[in-house]
Image (cartoon, rainbow, N blue to C red; front, side, top):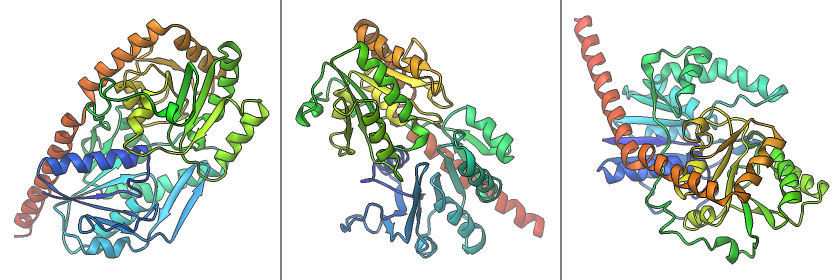
Length: 399
């Protein structure tokens, strides 16, 4: 098959959606398919290897705020006209790319091509103006994307209900396929836990968060929780690894200063893909304090590294973090519960080890990419076959 993946940003940019699509592309190519990628040139790259297969579009501007970012690339319509795939797979959010792709393949393309859309995050944590704008977009442009799609992929079982109730999507169009983990790459027996030592970060109890720094991640609550942790466990450090959007990172740094934690909270720039497994291997506890998630791939990767996890009880995360089985779960925004769970894992290393081992076993059995890539391959084949049958039936009816 000739498969086109459309995603707002792509590695070397680091993020859950970016890493998911990169691995999906790699796995599909290993299965023998020709895979094209259309994405934004963000961050800008000058290299042109694989240029025939990866189109990085010039960025008009990047609309960003504490809630995230939206890369705007008007040349997407020209790029899509140059490609002739058998199937198109679009990833959203961020916004813009999915809307443009749906419009192009519905109104501008001379050939009817099946469209698959993966909805990676339903953000239910926004407030005030952000929520008003998000809801308005959902009722208009986002509904158009889903109406145009032949199949819609969600990352967890709870989002099936979201698709039906909030967007009016028929159940038969919805497929649940979670993101995958490369359990061979994220293997504690193969990865050296020396990254923090190389970066001069030293403590017997290192707590890690890694991901995008925006309000939906709940990092202000994690920093407040760490203040309580640091009072009980003196030799502890919190590492926050990732890039911020808007001035959110600056707000977090100000919060650490206000709480007198500047010497014990380290803000680390994103590490390279090569060093990323070592980043996870180097921590003692991984924490996800998010207010909303469809599926936190980095948390699943931490579990694959046999790391004990503390996560908030939000949609998607509950798919693989089972309380007292593969990790500890707390309610979002509950600073005290979050600090208590972190302290428990730092003090009870036997429990931490058991949860980590259980976590790897669960992830390897349910979320390894070797299984999930085949599911996407089957979905594409079904979508192409369905369109052909529909076209044949329409032709007969016209006669």
